[in-house]
Image 1 (cartoon, rainbow, N blue to C red):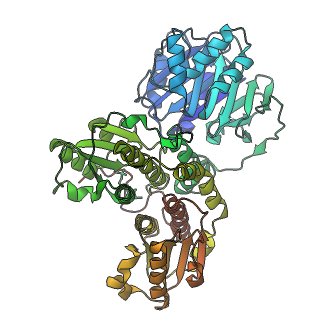
Image 2: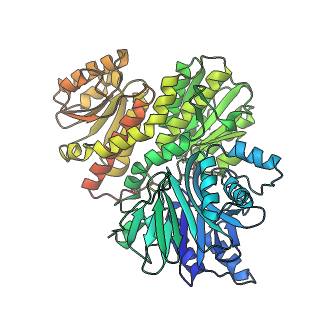
Image 3: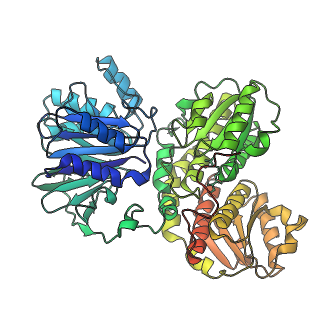
Length: 603
Ligand code: M6R
């Protein structure tokens, strides 16, 4: 995700901001920039590494200085990485400078309105509407604070905003569903999307809650709520080591990324579901031509997401199939120009997936990249692109990106189903997707996965079973488990156990069974659980409690009740925690498991 740093009250503002940006590099970024204020605003920004920004500042003949400033590392969501899309963004007269994390859902309508009023936009971003709005309110005679607050009233979505305004020595900030922290130094004050941004200067931090505004001035900071009332918050001192800081205090990036899922899922859904119309709104797909069948190509975790997507489409009566990209690349399935070949790829750089997509494109299919990385090879080469907006993932094990892939696949499927005249998206699904981030948070807060895995340390092998949409989740649970624990783990369609794998089942092979809802599949899976129970295998049940399955389980990992398409995503979070805690128990190199790479660029 993007990174924000701000500081007030230091003489070396530029160096402080650059140092903060450098401490945020671990989050991943494609461009960086900063704005210095106090008097006139000076903005410097560059695509690429922080070194490019430093070089630009060195070249800048008028030396940039001031005692207030904001900086940003960008991870593209709207518009490709470029100098002009980098933050900070300014209004037309360079009076207001803004850095933004998150997504402004209603930016297009505001942009249209401002364009009609004669304002020229200089970037493709959603963020640029903010400085123009503030400038407009300044022109109306509002003071800087009121103009900022009025602009915030206009925007919808997720945002952490930091703003400086010509002629003031303050930073104006607000947060909604995107983190923001104030650093309370002795004589200087800081703002960060994450504590490492300013940890070299202070360890005393105040976390903003949703809807809270902060103003940082040379003589102190204040926080107020949406009603304009002052909020008293005492700084807390963080005790993290240097190594922990990049991980926000988590012991591994994987655990941090598992815990980021409520935020990344909100970002994924943001602006893409319209509850009033019970519909998904995915502008990126507006230019798809007629589609009569869908082929997914993907590897590893992304392949499991593809299996889930294919099942959703079949459920909507659309012909679809998921292929392992490495197989498809050498033996492609027949396509026509009405075939949509979807490359599901977090990185957008996986060689097998790129090769399969190129093969499909050469044969005349339409191609779509469903990816996390703006400007990746898949995004550039495919005819269409749909971003999952999970933010950068550092751990080799895919976690938050898998969840965002599943949600994005729901959006794709509903878009295609509507195009084919299938019944419209139902209210229950939209509501369930909207509720998902909070439900994931609940699972994260309440999970007993750590205690459960302690019971099975030293067992021989670990099996994961599920049916229907829970089958890909079982496969993913096993992949995650084997990848980071180095223990033998396999995922099976629950009904397949009796066709061979049952021979492996003993009292030392725990079975992780996913049972959600109470349909025929759930009941049949309970039958499969009884089969393994009869062979003395311990059963760990991941369930929403809709069936009587708990009677046959040794341990239960609960998930909240949800829509049948969404429950597998909640079950997956429990399995992520199972894998993580077991690997941690063994002291594995969780973020960089042996022999594996984050991006596999060879076939
Ligand atoms: O970047 P991609 O999604 O194309 O990567 C595909 C696989 O290499 C990847 O999903 C891999 O299986 C995961 N890192 C495993 O956690």
